[in-house]
Structure formats: C-alpha cells, structure tokens
Image 1 (cartoon, rainbow, N blue to C red):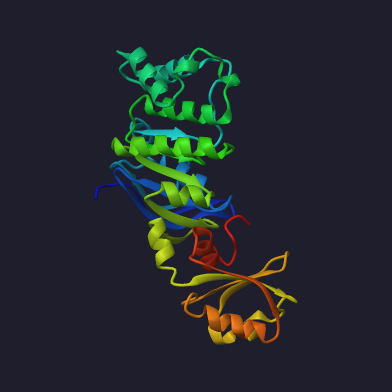
Image 2 (cartoon, helix red, strand yellow; image 1 turned 120 degrees about the horizontal axis):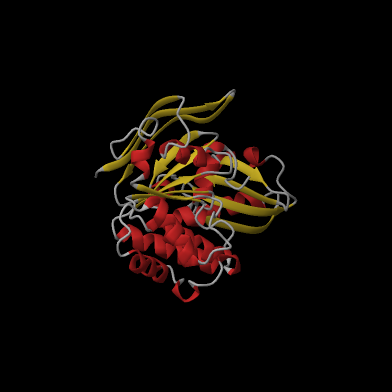
Length: 310
C-alpha cells in the first residue's frame, strides 16, 4: 500500500513539556486512520505537526512527498482540515460559507455553483442552504465543515474529534459520510477519544497517551491480540485482597469501583468460569459475574493502567 503520511521518531516539545514523544506511524492511501487517546494525549498536536501548523523538535515527517516544516503551502493544496472547533461563519448561510472557502482555496472556480450544490446535497444540507448557519444544529455545522473541506478535492482529510458534541443519530450520519468519501478514494486521519467511534469507523488505530504511541493495529487486531477475558464481579462483602483470593487464576489489572464492582483480566475466562465462581463462593456471596471480550477501553487500560475516559 502507498503511504501518504509517514512520521519517523517525531518529537515536539513546548519548553519543558514533551507533547509528542518519539512518534512513528504510516498512513496508507484510502484508509481511515485513527489517533485514539484521552484529552492531552497529543492527538491534536500530532495533526498540527503533520499539516505544518507546528514545527517538529526532532524527527521527520513526509506528507505526499513533502516536508511540512519546509513545504507547508504545498501540503495544504492537497489536504483538508475539519478542526475540533467548528469554525464556520454563523452569520452567513451554507452557500456563502462554501463560496468564501472556494475563493481562498480553489484554484479553478469554474462550475463552482454546481460543486457547492453537489457538496451540500451530499451532506443533506441543500434544503437549508440559504438559511443562516447560526440556526443549524451542531451536527449540521459539522457536516457543513466537511462539505467545505471537500470543496477543493483534497487527497487527505484531517478530522479532529469528528462527532464532538453531537447526538448518537448525527454521529452515525457523519460516520456514513466519512465512509462514503473513503470509498471514493479519500484518506482520513481522525483524532478521537470516543472508543465506539474508533472501533466502528477506523481501519487502523494508533493508541496514544502522554504523547507516546502505546499500540497500533486494526480495532479487531487490538482486541483479538489482547489474549484475555474481562471479568467483572460483585460480591458481598467486597473482596479486599482480590489478588490473594484469585491468585490461582493469575488476574491482571485488578480495579475496584466505588459501587462495589471488581474488574480484572484472566486468560480463558469462559473455561474457568465455573471454578472461578466456586472459589469466590467459599468466602463471599457472589451477587453477579460478567465475562466479556475486551473493548478498546480494556486494551487502553491494559497498556496504561487507567481507563481511556479518566
């Protein structure tokens, strides 16, 4: 596969703070590549380095054969950006927003009205195209921002927190639009701290924390390679020394919640369920037990020792 973005040992420091720490990644043409991690993980900084808004401290970045530190203007001809804050002009209508963008970024304005109409219809906004954007919902503004980004036909689209602040229905709508564009050959790099979004939308993921890469792969690979089942139990009373009580099962990453649940990881959880129940019942009343395959949050917890949402 052709790599359209390559990062090699990239470092970005702000005085004493290392925001990106020795990051390596490759993004293939025509895929949806996700940067997954909590707020402050370095996702937005990474995007800003790739598109040339920030200069790297160390390492190397290649975007379609260009160096963003030296050739940012060339790169911006080939990319589109939907930032975390939806920066559309709310006093203008949807058509005027796209016309303003075209005047700045489109080299050939012939057939512009037709292109604007196509993009607004694609995003289900044509019927509201003459209405001031201040009347739009958050999801409509995100769709308008994506329509605007597509107007100059970029090869790579960067989407920072695609569904931030939108409801479930709008979220799935936006995901469908992104997948449609991927099917047309567009490459997406998205940053998110939404596990469901990363799982359902991305072809491959790089999980980040504190500026460092934790693990990379497809959502399915990350979960399949985890190799353990997630056990959640509730006992009466709460098991104080879980590691000692369950040491036969070699539990890992034991977490006890404020509402009395205990969560841990073991291998072959389904096969050991009966023995596990009998062991717990020797000294405790078992109120509930759940055995589940790992989620991306479980993968993150396993590698970092904390939940993604913390």
